[in-house]
Length: 316
Ligand SMILES: [Zn+2]
Image (cartoon, rainbow, N blue to C red; front, top):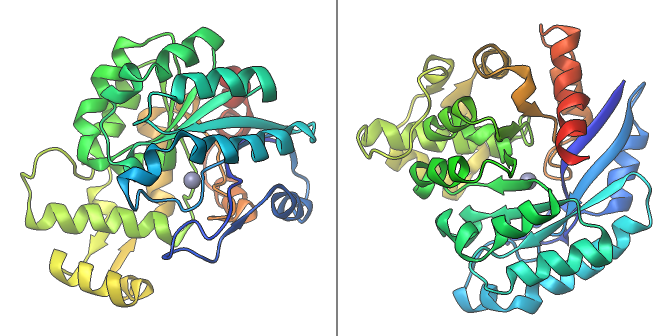
């Protein structure tokens, strides 16, 4: 089976104090792929999230060099391998981002832009203001977008105003209502499946549901009604936060979700032509995720769209 993997972290280790264990390198990825049976990863889209991962201080993230240095390291690395495509990571707050995309397209043949609005805690309007969308459009490359829940209601305007650019929203948008309707309503919006089988993904979904439980009209972010019945969160928001801080894995004693039904619902409601396979290596396991999707009840045609056809169309 042929696969294109559109979401791979290549920033190294120690992204944050919370997640020091992940070591995301080309070598580690290739080792994981080497263990797969009957799977050929034809192309792998890797990006260079700088380390540390989260915006610990604003100042730190405003240093343009902070991104450039990692892009240089990972961009060069990707060029050494035929099957790696480089996605340039940029800071949505920085006015250097447009130049950084230009540089990485010309020097490392970058074929996508990766932006993490959540880590930088800024709204999607910055993508236009900082020239990030303009640059992606000029080079006809997609934007892989990790959204920010706080601004999920602001994203649709930006996506629908920029129809010439494809947006790939990471992690299935965490089942969030605004993201789901954006992908349903806009031809240039897609989801990647990255992190689907990881605990981090489920904890984030539980968080949204726990939050919505105390604050049903907090308004802007909530689980999409398609999925509500498939997620069970048996604790309140305060309890969620307490457990998350002390021993996050204990959340699974109180919270659960029918992952298989969730995934099949995505395909049923949104369509297999809108979902791109992304592993989230090394935060999630490519082998586990391929097995999960491949053993679902979807048709072969749906699986081929997700594993290969959609990415082929969007990244090439
Ligand atoms: Zn990721």
